[in-house]
Image (tube, rainbow over all chains, first blue to last red; front, side):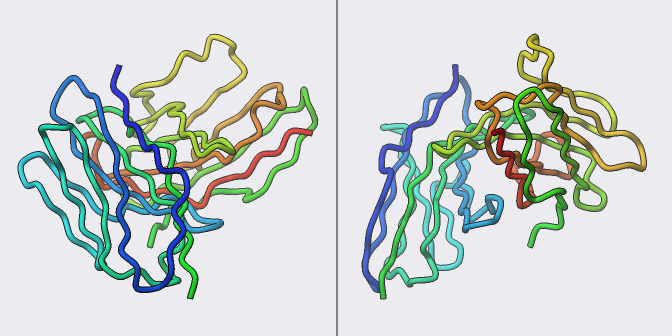
Length: 111
Length: 114
């Protein structure tokens, strides 16, 4: 069945550090690739999405890229702030079906 | 900001008790999803609706979970006989269309089964 793998469980950074999170996926058809962010006490919020038609998405300083050859997609930010501390989830979406989430990367940014 | 409203935010039940949680989707969103997020941050899709009709659901043959989205009332998810393994964050989400990546989540109901 379809799946997504997010191996980085925890990332610890200092402010202004570079953030990079990677996910790989396995789907039967071309999916839409998404990144969600979840702050404590909140539900997940959509941060970025990337379709296979355009290989990059940009929002709030974050950039999502996609590598079809390795069926992987990445989230990066050039300079993180303490307010970026949260859990980041990759997810895949195939039309009409439920989202399939990775297991999340907890990002902790110290001032 | 999401306008999906979930109540209650926290729910504590004893094993064997019923646990019921509610969700008001964002206004104008006919598609509603329920997910379970466990302590390991694993998401499990439970069921989704379009208006009052079930679109997809996991195998609920154990029959402990039931859900509905009645007209003009909040959607609900109920566990008939709670078990310790049901302790999790239950997330409701809504969307404008079935085939739409713009899915908006509520803050969830944190169920603890003691």
